[in-house]
Length: 104
Image (tube, helix red, strand yellow):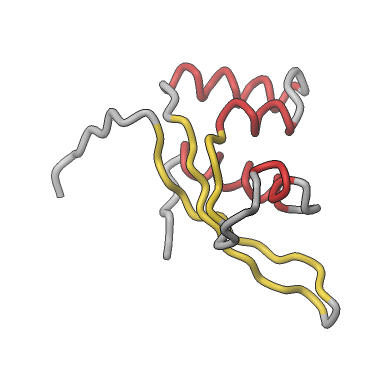
């Protein structure tokens, strides 16, 4: 497979997880659209996150453009306000910049 250089400003990545439900954990899946960063920017953001110099909320605001959760009128703020979703978005971003397979 040939190397493909994508210079678009954003990219789509799946976000999956489980949220508490009435009958136990309920799986969810959404699509996140992340800003494309250089490796130097990724390294800097990763170090800031590790050291606590940037909060999870600040990191999400830096890397995330939008989410598609299948609910037409849901705003980004509404989706991220659901407990557990922001954490799964951050995990997906770290997976995406570390080269983890996106899955289906």
